[in-house]
Length: 295
Image (cartoon, rainbow, N blue to C red; front, side, top):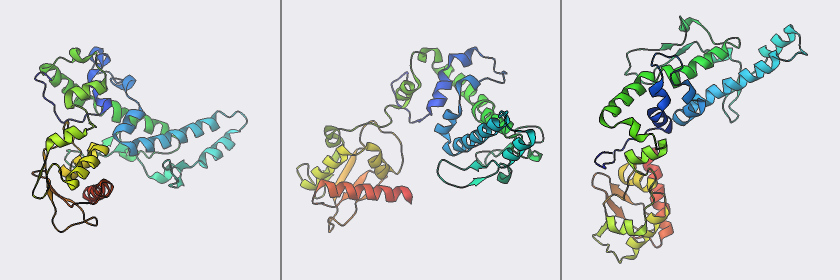
């Protein structure tokens, strides 16, 4: 930011909010609730939707359980029977139901990668020997969220904040929102490229000129579709790009409407059939993009 250079670091909104938060600066790093007021399960959903959805399913189970426990019309035996019959809904869609005991969980979490020097994190003492049941599921959810959003990320976020602050004072960024800081660091994540931008950064060769119908179909199609799709096709990555890649477009000889384009991602060299219209070109280019992403 000091020399106006952009860095391709797509940090999450949650991480940026923790990075900028003045509350963290004022808090004691030894506090058990270091990040707790600043992070929720909605933040986890942005970073790891599957984990968040599972914990939300457990929270719904807990709400049903508490409703039964607070029902004054039921006897204690009736409450126990009703709670024992509760089922956990797996996912927002119809993925089946099961009891909490059927999940076979214990109070441990696995590391996100095999590179870490541990096999599991125990959420409580001797957690590997403590099964998650309907009786203790509240504690399990509480411990999971605390690890994902507080104790498990505390040292990493603190180290990043301290290192960043040595180079660029975080106090200088307090006037900006997390989204604005992301733009300052990495630029616009989903830029919209105009027709003039594409003409400026694209060079037709070997069968195409700037007046060729096939090349102009490409420019027209390019300007109408989200830049991320073409960026995926030309580079095989989802990196942000502030301007179109400097692209060479050549005519793919012996090809027509039924053919697909091909690309050399190392040098941004596109071999493009001369399609009869921009719509067919767009369909073929998007189909080729989806094929690249799925393989």
